[in-house]
Length: 170
Length: 170
Image (cartoon, rainbow over the protein chains, first blue to last red):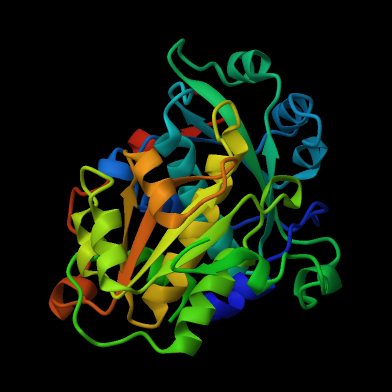
C-alpha cells in the first residue's frame, strides 16, 4: 500500500477484534517509532508495551477518552521527560506516533490515541522513574468493524484546503 | 513504496537540487498534512507555503539550524495558536508533519525540519494575526545528493530496540 493511500484512508479505530498481533508485526510497529526523526536526533521517547488485560484496563482509566485502551490488543504508552516549555519533545513524540500508526495501518492493524490526563496515576502504573512521564498511549488491534477501517474518508471531516493552506503570507 | 520501507529509509535531506516540485505533488504533500488525525479532530494547523527565494532566505534566519530553508524548493511554515500548556497541539503538528514528509519521501522529495527560535520575527515575515504563531518549518526539495537520499540507515544512528522498548512496566 502506498504511503499516500495509507495516509488518505487512515481512520481512528476504537473497537478491536480478538485477533492477536504477531510478534514480528509488533516489532515492525515499534521499530517504525524508534526510527523516527527527531530534533537534534534526541529520540526523546520510551515505549512501554502493554498486553496484559488488567494493566490495559487500568491505563484506560487515566484519561477521559481513553476507554478504548481497555479493549486494545496492544497498548503502547509514550514516555518521555518533562515536556513543559519543550515544544520539540511533544512534536517529536507526534512524529514517532504517526510512524507507528501508519505502519500498523498498512498491515491492517487499526489504532487510536488516548491522551493521559491522570499522569501521576499512569506513571505509578507503569513504574516510571521520577524524571519520566506518560502523556499519551496508543491502542492497536485488528478492527472489529472492517467496513469502518476501509471506508473512504468522511466528507467534511477535515477543514478544506483553502482554509488551511496559505501562499507566501497569511 | 511501502510505508514500512519509507519509514525505514527516511533520512533528513538538507541540500536540494534545482528540480521544481510539480503543483500536483505539492498538493499531495499538503493534503497529507491536512488529513492527519488530531486530538478531538481539532486540526490545530495552518500551512504557509513559501516558494519565493527571498522569503525562504528570510525565514532561514529565524532559527539557529534553519539555514537549509534558504535552499529549499518549497518551505512549509507550520502555524498554530499558542502551544504553551497545550501538549496535544505540538503533538498533533508533529503527526501532520510526519504525514507530509513521508508522502514527499515516497515521491522522491527530501525534507527536513527547522525549529523557529525567533518566533516574533517569523510571525511578522508571514503576516500572521496576533493569535497565531510559527514554531517550525519544513524544507522540501529533490535531493542534491541522491546517494544520501537512498542509502540505508546509518548503523547506530538510533537508540537500540532494548533501550527504547519496555514490556508491561519500565
